[in-house]
Image 1: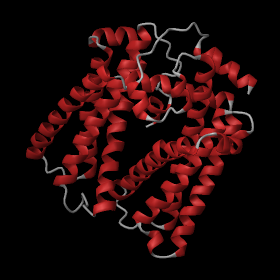
Image 2: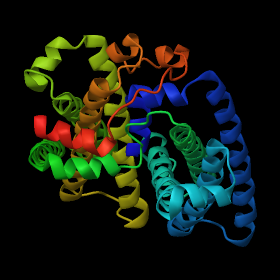
Image 3: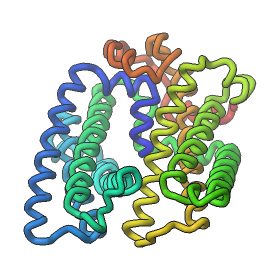
Image 4: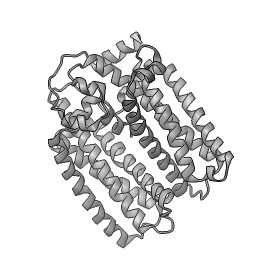
Amino acid sequence: MLHRMTLRVLPRLAVAVTQEAVRKRKRLVMLAPGLVAFAVYRLAKQADPLDDPVTLLVLSGLVSAVTALWAYRIGRADSLRMLWQEDGARLVGWVVGWIGFAYGVQLSLMVLALLKVLVHYDFLRHPDGPAMMAIIIACTSVARDAFEIGHVRLLQLQGESVLTFPDGAPLRRLFQERLGALLQWLGLAVCGGMALALGAAEMSEVGRTDLAQLVVVTLAAGSLALAAYLAGEQRPGGWRARLGAVGGAELFRFWWWPGLAFAATYYLVLAGATSFLLRLEQTGGLAQGLIAGIVSGIMALYCYYLGYRRQLEDRVQQTVPASLLRCPFVMGILTKSGPLSSKPVVPSVDGMAQESGRRG
């Protein structure tokens, strides 16, 4: 889900995909796959009751994969043949395999776990409703993100400066440049998340419930994500100084989204995999600690990367409105902003990332 955070946290990408004309097209793109997913669910249910989690997840992944390719093509405003020729097998395969199949499976697990944890609507006991919602919600979300990625790719081909394409390639380069810092934050987050989850489980029977673990892990991982983001920005004084320098409203917005929102999402995905794939009715303390460590580690890693890319884009591309640079998480401001205004001449992404690594 790193692509989703990248598309909203980095101001230039957020401006590109939240313009009013783009949003209108996106609503239509999201509506059609939802209706098709419902029809596919009804047809598949005639041949199979869809009461097996693996069957449901495979079906959801396949429908999402087709949806991702279709929505990406709409965002790119080109034919499938031109997509293959201009974007190449690697990018198209990433859209279909990761943004489509893998992301669709993750979202379906999240929906199933959310229904079980919050409203006790267990798929294993009542498969119909959760199965339908898992397929439709996953499909529409995949359509939204694939369309936005396709639109960003279209802007890139038209000559717009896209310093951070949301395919995760810059994160892999960051591992080469700042492995020590990433491992430090990763270790801190994993250990801290595990300690808090296990501590809550040891305190009382309530602390061992899925709902209590969701709250504890979300708060812990979201807070660590905020600190990692500020550290990734590499501003003078480090992340502690940034806590005092950045406005409280901006800190709260990032802590709330993507911090708490994606921490809860990752927890539900892993809890769903534990409940519906491993079929563990009651998650033990070790499993709860492992889930908490994974969620906290992922959030710290991703948010350090986002802070690093934000700092790099602020330095290289100064055409983003100043209001966005001060407060990039207010989506109302992002929506009202005009289109990307100019095409600055900048060095290559790889060169700037390497230069930043040396200077840091």
